[in-house]
Image 1 (cartoon, one colour):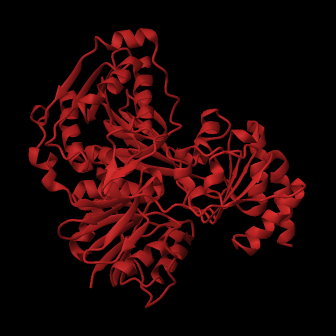
Image 2: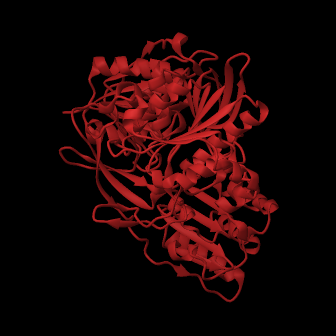
Image 3: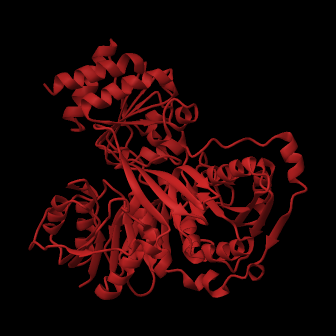
Length: 318
Length: 263
């Protein structure tokens, strides 16, 4: 039975949800799982130890040396040599994709990024969106293992802990040869939900009228527990930062509920949000393309509807 | 000081894509410079604005037919362009493309290499990182703020993540991949367009690059595309009707709770 190696991620004392999603994928592909993590938190390390791993390695970060692709890839290459996993699994997160790519480049191991589906078989096929989701591609690895993949967050169900608890072995990465080092993290303001991990997204386009009206969406997001998205048009206008952009040159998202406010629905935007479970469109123009992908639409003015919607949702929650 | 900018051509993000058999048919699709590469080019041009001795070289593995798009990079202010067009290169394999680009980059001995964070086609996000690896250079990916210190031979770069902004410190030379928002790309001026026609533009074959033909060739790929498909179409939805706006909003909240069960 196949062996896997997962590169787990923690944020402070918490294991990220993607870590449990990677465990699900690891169990789909094999039995014995080695976990690698890089955390300074004993709490996060203990949580990782309970996931059901055969072995856990902590690449210990230092105060001002938190991560270095070159050093981490070198440590992983050594582990791969020793453990001989068939699959090496990362999250398609900023650091996950960064390390996966450097590792693939350094070792020449085959790499499929941003996987959203796995079809069992010998060998299994891996599904990944292409052109930001306009096309779905099915890929296979050629040749002998190991193989590297990154999985998209919020797609695979998070695994429950199972099996025996393991304690972590500490490995001190050799930072001396690393010439690009993560030295600090400026933590996000509390309450800001990442678009790619959000359950609910409320997104604004030109139809919200003006930049100041994004405040209405932030109010909604704050009270409902949602993240704020935006169309390319309003990002290019400078109404809101690019970090909020949904679509082909922004983020691809898949929340449970996506509320598009005043977004007409250009194809590059639709590509980035059409896998949302439920799409609501609010637009004054009843022939806007967004209504073709929406499960529910309201023809009308966002400025009027969004505050009412917020009120009614809060009422319905009691 | 030389600065290299890696680019590629991709389908226009506004384009609809169709299939021919099991794969995407790009034969009638309008191609553009990969949007993220435009931010890489702009970052290089900003350095040239501040240092008249800096030379910006645009490198692309791709079809010579995309010449017009590359000439536009020259019109924006780049000094030279090299397009490597050879069917012997496995252009779908990022490691093969990186082998070719790294060979060309070595000849330039640049201080910096810029690229987009990924191609908006297959989104591998691998080519530029593999160039860094082949050159034995550091890289920082998905950069939204970049500050080089050429005198000290160092840089700082900021990337965004779900944890917050990540700050990297590194040494030059380095490969930097650009996120949208790194800068605001300029438009070509009429003067720039006129000058671009006279700037050096070379078309190379694999043999001209000095790359290892085996590493650049088709036999090396460890991933195969089995099939490309359209995503499943969404079921048609419905417009919520109602006399007053409040009626429609209340009905929407009801269906979101009771039918879609998403609230």
